[in-house]
Image (tube, rainbow, N blue to C red):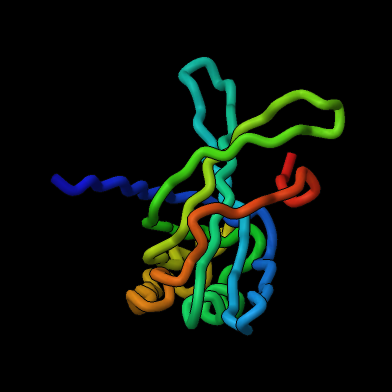
Length: 139
């Protein structure tokens, strides 16, 4: 029987998109997505997700996703571990995005409900793993 693993996250972009190209010239857009939970006592905790968008959708993400913009991403999660500068081990959830929806910016303005679903060929070429340095992870 086949397996299925998908995550849906709504959060705010931690920075503008970082657009890069693979050795074959395919675009890859990377950005962080922060989700803040508030407890009844008023405490806040932010979880960070590292997102990557491949192919034609990477160009769309680069054009529209900006720091502070609210975005919904749907994709395949993977937890990655890394060493911090102080040599402690950290972990981060990385999402290979299959679909994203722009919900607006931090003030609620912007282009709400702009959705983009990449073609199946653009995500099929995504590598199974990706490496990130601690400089790329917002603190």
